[in-house]
Amino acid sequence: MTDQTPVQPRAEVLGGLTSYLQVDGAFKAAEFYKKAFGAKQVFAYPADEKGRTMHIHLHVNGSTLMLGDAYPEHGHPHKAAQGYTLQLHLDDGEIDSWWQRAVDAGCEVATPLQVMFWGDRWGQLNDPFGVAWAMNAPVK
Image 1 (tube, one colour):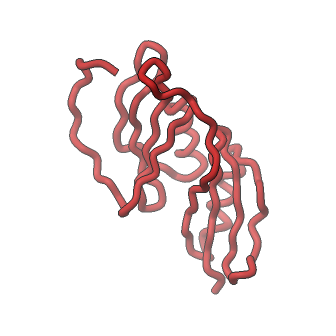
Image 2 (tube, rainbow, N blue to C red; image 1 turned 30 degrees about the vertical axis):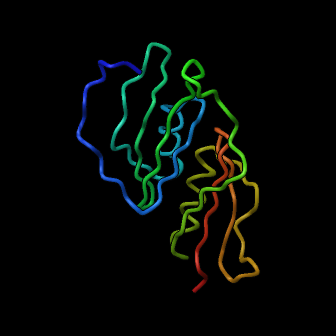
C-alpha cells in the first residue's frame, strides 16, 4: 500500500451486494477461486514487497467478490473466516458440474449435495482459505 500505486480503470461491480473477504494469501485465493468457481479476475492492485495485495476484484456467477490480504501494521490483522457462508445460486442442470469442479479444485465437502427439506438441492463446501461456500439449485 503506497501512494505510488497507479490508477487503473474501475472494474464493473456486478450485483447489489458485494462480499469482501480478508484472506491469508489473496492472490492464491483468487487463483483458487478461478479453478473452483470459474471466477474471472477483473482488477488487482499489484503485490507489495511481502506478496500481499489490498484489493482483488473477481466476477463469480454474475456477482462481484472482492478480496484482500491482512495488513496488521495498518490495523487489519488476519482473522479466520467464521459466521458466514457464500452461497452460489445455480440451475438444477449446472449444480453438479459446479460442485464437482469445486471438489476437484480442493474444496472439502461439509454437507453433501442433496435435496433439502425446502425442496432445493443444496450442499456446503469449505475452501482451503477457511471460507464456507454453499450451492443451491431448485429441483425441476
